[in-house]
Length: 334
Image (cartoon, rainbow, N blue to C red; front, side, top):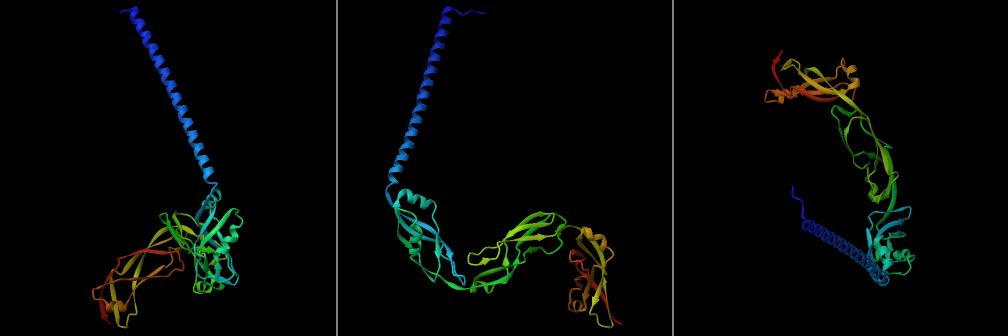
């Protein structure tokens, strides 16, 4: 291996020193650049703050939409039509005050004493609490209200729901709400034709157990409700499938007539709560029949049997029946 010469060693040391000096100078330049950026950012922020302080201390004009709320109403009167949602108010004052109003517009609480309301006066009275803010204009200036006699009545609650079940599950009774009726009150023209009050839509998917939910009632700003929500309850159970063969019968058959069918029975498949299946096995659940009028009016040679539910168990649900149509023949005079 060849040993480095003194000149070579000297050259390496010189190059290393120059690199070290160059890196140190680059670090110093980077530090100076960062300091300049920080100083510039702070100066910019201070300048913006001073600009806002100076300019927002001046007086300005501003149009702002204030929400309208009916705060006071005679007990025996009610609105038959809604109020305008907002009033456009032109105000003047110090910029700081106007920004606060613009970001959080205060509501105009109407004190209704008659069918005509001076909206300017109402706004002026409520804005008096805000010093150094002047009301220049209110649009609309006057409100004409449609007031009618207030009436009340009890109506049933109508649950609105969309419920899907896990496979083989279903209701074992009609869903109920508690309470099942509420009192509504409002203008006579709005209330007199109402026969029920709906809930908000309840949507539940993949149900496999009893349901008990608090459901809000549908809202209407012109109609008052005795309560705002009800309890929705529904019993749910697992079902199993049963199958039974039912002989076909003919109803309204005239004397001296006899009709045979092919096949002579149909198979009915049904769902029943799994806990009640064993108790129903020996019970006659269905009758399958055709009427003589069906035979007389038929021109195809095939008729569709009808199935009558005989059991008192309201939870039995027919799934299908086969065959859907049967042939008939041997219509004989005896």
